[in-house]
Image (tube, rainbow, N blue to C red; front, side, top):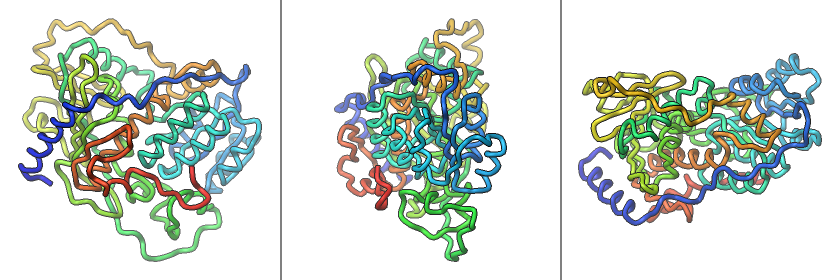
Amino acid sequence: MNSKTNRRNFLRQSAIVAAGVAANTTFAKPFFIKPSEAKDKINIGVIGVAGRGRSNLEGVKGENIAALCDVDARNLAKAAEEFPDAKRYSDYRELLDQKDLDAVAISTPDHTHAVITVAALEKGKHVYCEKPLTHTVSEARAVLKAARKAEVATQMGNQIHSHPSGNYRRVVEEVQSGAVGAIQEVHVWASAVYEAKPYPVDVPPVPDYLDYESWLGPVEYRPYHPDYIPFKWRNWWQFGGGTMADFGCHNMDLPHWALDLGTPIAIQQVDGPAPDPQGPPKQMVVQFDYAARGDLPPVRLTWYQGGLRPPYIEEGLVPDWKSGVLFVGEDKRMLAANYTQRVLLPEYKYTNHKAPKPFIPDSIGHHAEWIQACKTGGSTGSNFGYACELTESILLGNVAHRTGKLIEWDSKRLRAIGCPEADPFIHHHHRKGWSL
């Protein structure tokens, strides 16, 4: 995977693809949204009420929390203490049958995002869903199709996109105003660590407080084990996608937004281990090539995870931040991270620099955007038109790792050109009774 031959081959093939493929136009964003019937507060069902679910519950609790759902009865009981009038469920399908619900907030593991989201959209509910929006690329397309048809307010939970600090907005304004010049190179890194682990061999009994069938949902049956629940499921492909799936929608969001990247045309792991059939790698480096977009040049985005960093840090050209997004122009750079950090480099080139006058309105808050869209028919920054596109891109990084090959992406046909072994990682395979 690290040979010079492979790198030269990737450069050659990427150039061929870039020359012959136009920027992806599969995703129209935003799309029309119909508001809920006029009311002071909308009725929301919250699916998953602990962990991220607890945070999302806090974010929407100013509305009427009409239903709570969690596969863990202990989590459900605790949430019900604060919302005693909400109806309670362990199976999301029963919650979605509740007639008075206007909207749902979904905070479940990745492998259940799509089936719950599509079911809610088909019932005409406004939907907020945690990131990544889906577990597979094909699920992302199914969600996009359902959202377009439903014409409801949607939002993916990459909270940094709409944080009141406005850090991402200011970075986007600098980049789009030309502060760094023409950008053809971006580096993105995340320090989080997940790592493939063997499946447990012991088979303990399912706790009486856990609805394990509902937790498994659409994926192939596997006996219960406490290693999976409530959090470590990201270490197995069956349930999650490791660091890339967990943090890609946060960190890669910024270059996608600032440079209007669309989906990539070529993806390849250029450093890292051979794929493990059971789970994601601790460390890897993946390159994504994006086509030219109008007057904007092609872009190569390089992703690093598990403590790996771009060479600019080792060379002392940028600060050593634990995570970050580095935009590289001809002789200037911009580095940004999380909710507050951003710097233009080298600093001596920006002695008299004045930030552009803000042209992206500040957000009223991530959950507040969604609530307002539910009530007024407006859109959100991470509506599913945008979020499906971003999710598809980050999931393709894992596809490239799992095949160990260059992925020349045919977005229209949803396939890796000349690489049929990628199909099982692109398309979902749901067990009977849980199809989209």
